[in-house]
Image (cartoon, rainbow, N blue to C red):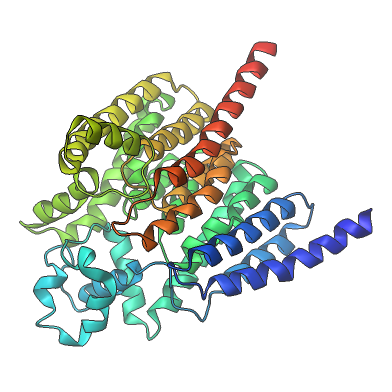
Length: 426
């Protein structure tokens, strides 16, 4: 039996590597092929998690899976064109927050391939990527191979996160992140920078647990300067801190934010950046869950889509804020903060109008810390969202929405019920 298990391990490794190698060459309109390969990789991932292997071997395995993408340009996402555009502007000393690509293309015609590649939706809006993101974009733009540079940064970030997760949780739960097909595909594969934000976020939580509050605040601020999402659950730490610790963390957080934000400040900065961020809450929609149900009901009543999303965007922001305040009041220990942060982010993602696959990377990292499997289930079913790119308009049919979200809700209810029983029995 031991020989069979060992042989199956060595069989799964080349199969998985081949799967990632093929996945790197799939267009996002090839939905059946994409879902088929991803399903194979996810099944292999679940089996691999059962093996007890030295950590160094797992590190090599995870690196090999990511390196399957090393020579390939992302085919499932065009966001990297905007990354290179913003980075090139910054490298030339131009503030990327102040100008639309539509305004600059006539001046910089040599960047036409970036302009066309990013698409009209991106080119007609101001950048919404925070400051450390911009610095990393410029690092890639200054190199001769920006895609390779971004990919190596993301792989390093994943490795750091894995090492920290093994300390905060366990090796097995750390592997749920390190070997996750979604993390590998959307990070090293499609070059989304969530893994870098997650590395700083998890580092901040680890340092907080170690009692290093100043260093923790700097790391947490850095995570916000990559993606704004950690701002959502940062307040949950408030009641855990003593007065002196709170002052130290607030000081470190504000100084770090100021240090990286000041170089970009301009009279127009707040206008353009707030406009860009606001669009995500009042205009854009993709692969929504709860919002989709509300939108369908609104349509039946007679409301227009634009009216529905503008109202929902404001109501949703207020609701999340109120839930965050409630959770803040309930958190007296770090363990409670971690569990409530995971739950708050899960609620947010289930209810937000826009949920791209790479948004789940943060949830997977927090899920590994609190040992909650719901994010793992969703990291598989969310691949169905790519089917929307074959449709016009880009909107999933309701049956695919149900197919994606029902397993997630079932997992959440099952896990919550088991936790409730354990507490009552204990």
